[in-house]
Length: 79
Image (tube, rainbow, N blue to C red):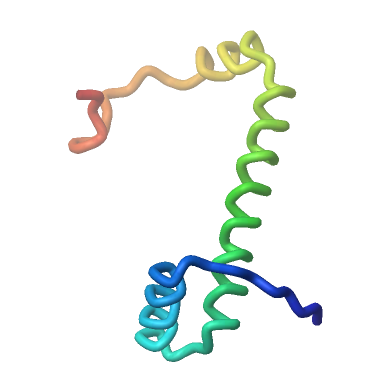
């Protein structure tokens, strides 16, 4: 593991301390979890952007055109 020195405004530190206490974890665990969640969100966004760049609209339309025309199940209608 690595150590990181971090300066935070007092108000943010206070919120972190309160929430970590409510969650029953240490401040270090809370911050580690928060950073992990942010990394995951950014990684997911990047992955989806890369997938979208590989997409082909014509192929997508062809696939959608093969979907049978049926009445939607109640509650699934477009509004």
